[in-house]
Length: 131
Image (cartoon, rainbow, N blue to C red; front, side, top):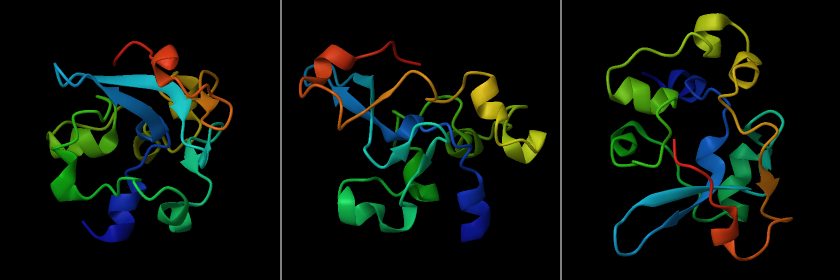
């Protein structure tokens, strides 16, 4: 898979751009409803993808060899599904041809997240149920 094909797998759900907390004792990962300040919470895409690491140095660059190690990727994530040998969901735009389908089926962050700019500093107050 070339770089363009790899990048095309992103379904625009935005879930990987949510802040996560890890329980130090159990190692369990908790997602929050707090999105990276660069996430366009309507489209589910980074507003400055090319330059994102200049603004968010710890932004993870998804690479094929890294995907299997990232247990915080949601089960619907196309990168994860491909890594696990599973098919893309019917709503994925590469299947449906519709970039809005991810939002219409409720598989994205649209409508239920807040920007880190507006969130309280105590992320524990923003934990949501895990996938």
